[in-house]
Every structure is written in structure tokens, then in C-alpha cells.
Length: 159
Image (tube, rainbow, N blue to C red; front, side, top):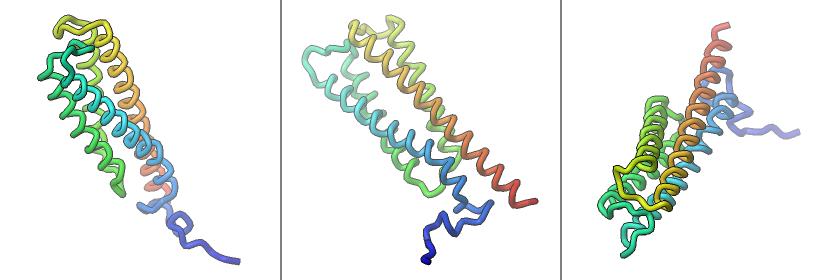
């Protein structure tokens, strides 16, 4: 018979190596990684769109460049956050808030005449608003799971 030396077999309830806490963080880490990739892809589209002579979205070039650069920074931040050994609640809450604000901004731009968007531009930003809102919601669910697992682990250690 062999014994495993993996961290999950040596985990003690209520400690940072607790398997239930790692299991709870799986959703949040997966969503953050996926959010990072989709944000980077969206940023590239915005930057490519800004370089075209005839802009298919109708976004002013300056707004497209600033948005694309900002999204690249967000994508890097989401990726770094997902790779942290322990997911800190405040930066995760900041990522959720950032997604909520960006989603609201995209929705406002898609539904108003603040920017002279084409029909495709409105559709593109509306789809972006929905996607960002879904990421914010899934990240919130993931954060709640981690908090519940931490509370359950702390409660098990005091009994």
C-alpha cells in the first residue's frame, strides 16, 4: 500500500490547505481566468477596430484605444489574481465591482446616443455588457463559496 503526499491528503480542517477551501476556490479561479482571456480578446478587438480606416463600431478612435488599453490592464489583473495561492477577498470584490461598472458603462453606451455607434457597434457593446455582467455574477458566486467554506472550516476547528 502506498500513501499519497499530495496536499489534499495532508490537509487539516480549518487550515489554508483545506480541501474544501480549494474546492470552493475552483469556480472563482476558473471564472477569473476565463474573464482574463475574454477581456484580452475584447481589448484586441477594440484596438484593432481603432486602427481601421472605416470603423465598423462607430466608436471614436480615442475611446477605442483608451478602452482597449484599460481592458488589457484588467485582463492582466484578473490573471494575476486567479494565480494567487490564496484569493484575497478585497481584490476579488474589486474585480467584481470593476466588471459591474464596465458592464453598466457598456449598456449605457449601447442604449444611448452618447457615442455615435453603428448598429453593429450597439450590438457589440450590448453583448459585451451581458458578458461582463455574467462574469461579475459568477465571480460573486465564487467569492461567496470561498467565504462559506472558510466559515465552515473555522466552525469545524472550534468544535
